[in-house]
Image (cartoon, rainbow over all chains, first blue to last red; front, side, top):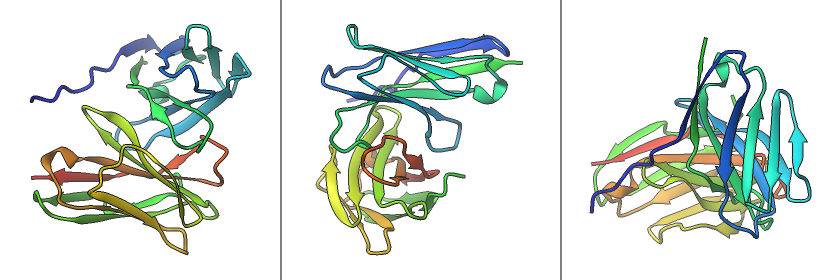
Length: 113
Length: 113
C-alpha cells in the first residue's frame, strides 16, 4: 500500500516571543520524559528531561511541564530566537534501559526575525 | 559536534544487498544506541548495547543485526535490503544506562534502489 508521511504539527512565532510546544504521550507506565531538538541535517540534541515524580523542571530558557493525569508534556521556550528553529520531539521511557526512548512525531518550530 | 562519529554519511545500494553502518561513541561512553528515522515511522529505537553486551531491543527486523566491539565502537548490519529500509540511521551514546540524555551522531542516510 501507499505509505503516508508524517504530517508534523507546526508552530510559527516571532523572535522574542515565548513558545509552547505540546506533546501527548502514550504510555501511562512511562516514568521518564525527555525533549529533543533536531536541526536540519543533524541528529537529535538533548534539551531537558523530567521524571514522573516531578511536574515541572527548568533549564536555561526552557521549562518542561508534566501532567500525568492527562498524559501531557509541554516545553516552554522563553524569548525564542531564530536559532531555536528546529523540529522538537518529546520522548518517553519506562525506566528499564533509559535510552530506549519512544519518540513522538515532532513539532516544527519556525522563528521569524 | 556531539562527539559521536558515524560512517558512511550517505550510502546508496540496491535491493537484496547488505551494508554495514559504523559508529564511534563519545570518548568514555559505554552505551551505544541505534535509531532509525523515516518519513512514515518517525524516530524508532532499534537496539542498545552497553559495554559490549546487548541490553535492549526494539522492533528491529531479523535482517538487521548489531554488535559492540571491545573498543566500544558499534556496527549495524542490514541485510537483504528492501526499498522500505531507506532511512536515516542514527547512532547515539551515553555514559551509562540511567540517563535518557543521548548524544546523537549526524546519521547515515541509506537509500535502497
